[in-house]
Amino acid sequence: EAEVAQSPRYKITEKSQAVAFWCDPISGHATLYWYRQILGQGPELLVQFQDESVVDDSQLPKDRFSAERLKGVDSTLKIQPAELGDSAMYLCASSRGQGNGVGEAFFGQGTRLTVV
Amino acid sequence: DQQVKQNSPSLSVQEGRISILNCDYTNSMFDYFLWYKKYPAEGPTFLISISSIKDKNEDGRFTVFLNKSAKHLSLHIVPSQPGDSAVYFCAALSGYALNFGKGTSLLVTP
Image 1: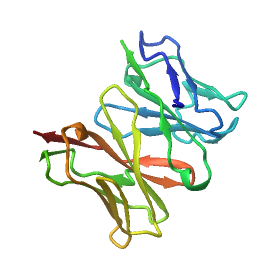
Image 2 (image 1 turned 180 degrees about the vertical axis):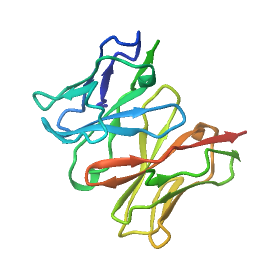
Image 3 (image 1 turned 120 degrees about the horizontal axis):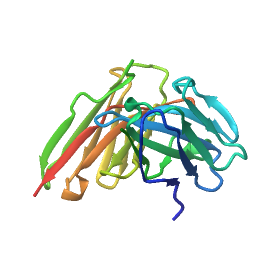
Image 4 (image 1 turned 90 degrees about the vertical axis):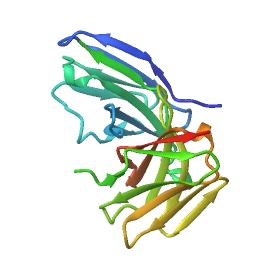
């Protein structure tokens, strides 16, 4: 069964350091999302790609966060410098983005980031 | 500004009984709603969805009801099973973006 792959599963980093997460969506899925989930909250959208283009990054803290999906396939999310408040689960999801399954996003297992 | 609200952070139900999880939304432009289920240390998994042109969608033990006038939807699980214990997120689709509620933690006890 096709899955969204994310790495690493866990990351501990010191504040002010740089950290990067990687996501490989399900093959053929045009839409890719990065969400951040703080414990006790629902996932919050950070950035959304349609193929290689950013369609929504309004909630992305652009002074420290960046995301790219250069070839419209896999994607990286980077934080530099990391702050204590960035500790959260970072979830990647993908969807076909059209038809009846437009809203059905498939999530990866996430990357649990701890900033110390 | 939370556009999707799940006001019950937790719910405990006995095995075999019905679980009802509620969700309210504020944006009348939402036209597609989904429920996701999440186990600890895993990403959310899609459970069931409903379009705004319908008021009910059923899939096995899971039924979602939509009341557009009240901007309210609910997920019914019957009969509830211990394996249903998880966090359930309500989500609403705006364009291609999913807006999630904070989740309700369901515990099904034997």
